[in-house]
Amino acid sequence: MEKYPTGFRFYPTEEELISFYLHNQLHGLKQDKIHRVIPVLDIFNTEPWNLPQLAGELCREDREQWSFFAPMQEREARGGRPSRSMATGYWKATGSPGYVYSSDNKVIGVKKSMVFYVGKAPTGRKTQSKLNEYRAIELSPTNPNSTSSNISIPKLRCEFTLCRVYVVSGSSRAFDRRPPKAVARETTIQGGDNTAISGGSGCGDASSSGVVAANVGSSHQWETASLEEPIWDWEQPDWL
Image 1 (cartoon, rainbow, N blue to C red):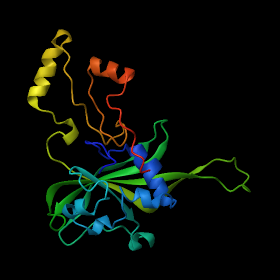
Image 2 (cartoon, rainbow, N blue to C red; image 1 turned 90 degrees about the vertical axis):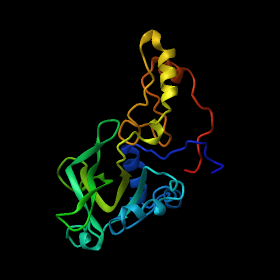
Image 3 (spheres, rainbow, N blue to C red; image 1 turned 120 degrees about the horizontal axis):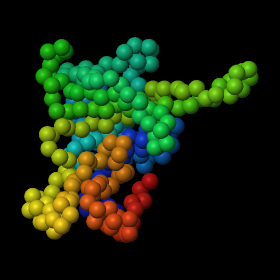
Image 4 (tube, one colour; image 1 turned 90 degrees about the horizontal axis):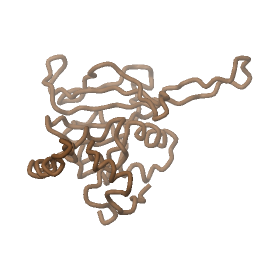
């Protein structure tokens, strides 16, 4: 921990999860370093309450979310449906799968959300454990001998999926929580323009800013400060 400043978190965007981490895993690159934050695990054969202790060594102390590479199941490789059940419960899809877009508005992956239920389907009891499963989309060039124009064909990669597991707590995430007195004091200081500093919407979605939680809200004073000089001045971690 001597290499990392207090408050360091691993909160990548969905684009970073797919474009960097999942693509490197699929191509066998940077394995020793990437697995320190996202290890390979048969996640659908492991109860969600056991996942935190199996997380990457650099994320094991996190209490809100954990990421894993899940290898393709043998039955799925043979054309069957993947199993999402285990002895104690099962993962059930919620909502419809959706596309994940890059910052330049290109489709780079597919996302499916699931909720863990304890018991046997279909009468299981819903828990607070949720999972986002990501698959990467790569562009494969057409046959150079083809008479058609040279257009890349999207291909869904299924050798590995990247799963982000988290627990719904009903309260704001850790990096948004602030003492009520501090919030009240800041509101008083900025009373002239009736603007209070907000904790923001949290990291972890497509609007987040990388591996360090740095959402400082919408106050004009903070926005101005962030443009003029960084709020912190430590060096960027060099583990990748």
